[in-house]
Image (cartoon, rainbow, N blue to C red; front, side):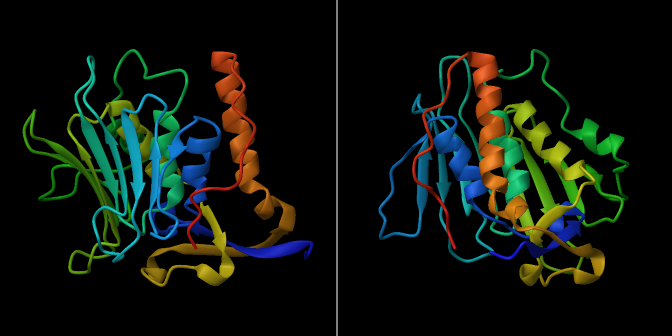
Amino acid sequence: MSETVEQAFIAPRYLAGIGDPGWITQPLHRVAGWSYGHDPLIPRVLLTSPDQLTQLRLTPGDPDDPDWWTIRHARSADQPAWAATFQSRTPVEIIAAFTDALIDPSGPPTAAPDPFTALQDAGWETPRHFGGLAAPDGIARVERVGTPGSDLWLIETTPFVVEPTIWRAVFTGTTPLHLIAAVTQALADPAPIRRDARRIPGWARDRMTVDTRHVPASDVAFALERRISALSERHHRVTGVVPAPPGPARGRIR
């Protein structure tokens, strides 16, 4: 293995492209104990939480399909059913903000956060003829539409008004606000996202900043394992329970 590899650091992060789906699926399985149940002959991933209430479904298909990633939570005694969907080009790091908050052993905060707060702190503003917030570059927008009981949270990234949407995320109004707030915080984070320099997305190239540099090969090769270890330590610190030893890699789609 070469001592260094070329990596592209892309900002804004919502234009970085999908990344490795294992960034999401492996922590769910190896840290939070979600079980997998899918046909190896079908290009689909299904993961179910230990309490059987929540399921993640990854169904690759047309890149413009609205629900490559679908996370559904069944109604329980103290919580209504909810669902979240992410299109194919959503960076895995942004989806992982949602799933990491979902499996956080600390549970939801006592007071529900406002998902708009992190965006406002990052300088997002309400553009003309729009009810939500838009990033300073105008590419990403977050909006809550509808009325209580039939509302949705929408996230869209579109370089220009007349151009197609790069990716969209949709959350039912019953989705816990701390999960949506985790996503908006990830959107507002100014830190770039790292990608293989040979796989820089072709869309909106003139709207992104790309810093290409060589980094230690070990940093790339073991990034996921370091993420798994950090989440496992958090789980152990809160619950006192050590997650089961990692099994073989699951949920990686090439």
